[in-house]
Length: 351
Image (cartoon, rainbow, N blue to C red; front, side, top):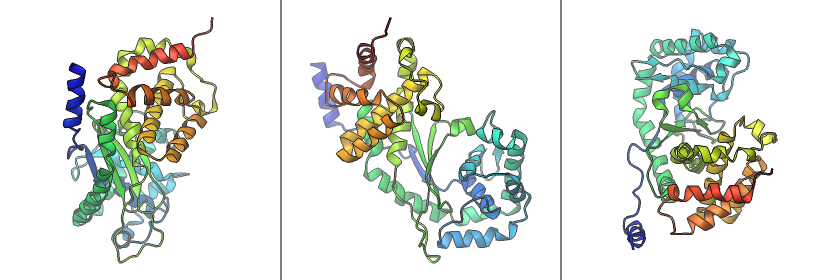
């Protein structure tokens, strides 16, 4: 009887859309600062034509000889995602710098070089009156962000994720719209860059119209955001379950396909990491099966299996049939132990 009442409550009281502070869509000042500096040093693809890129290049063009620009020029090979260092800054306009303990960039350029570069970028911020430029354009940033936020909300991705787990988790998304980025989108791991932002899952996306007009503002596409919401969001949702059932998960360590190319390519060197990734990728595929076309679902699942997340093939139908299509379990936390039993029975340890 209690279960019937619970199900009725879910039907009568649908999960709310995301809260105002659950999804932020705007131009991040740190990322914009570092992007401009790399552009001035010819260490970043030129932006696509827009009224904004024209204004930015005209305003900052006279600072090509700034020490921050010279520093980035001195780096041997510079990648587009180096601009993520902007997240090491906080408290704009009175910038505070967090110095990460370890970064991939330290291995490439040396820790002291990277930290010096961040400090020089802070100098660039003040020397060029960057904050004045940023504030002058803030109303436009807000408009671009609001337009994209409406598109994201229209597909109810966050609500669908909450609906899958049937409980809420303290997770926040930040879409960093990058009007000078002409090359692509990617996730930014804030927990290594600046722990105070570790509860934000950050997705950077740009303006990709090569035939843009210098008389018009850029616009931002709603593309591949479901991967950030469903995949990265699931890491947050299942984290407590991984801790609670750590012993049972460890007992399945014989399933670790550590010698597969996909594991090495993704730097997955422990069974715990492997299990976590197989889980969230399976859950994402289940959501694709539920809310996307059959072709999109098959393509997504094949991509994961092809990357050597081999348990996705079995977990997707198991989760979909026994949980997604069932009212037997109150929420995913109640269902989770069944997954461990299933794997243990499906793949018994050989003596």
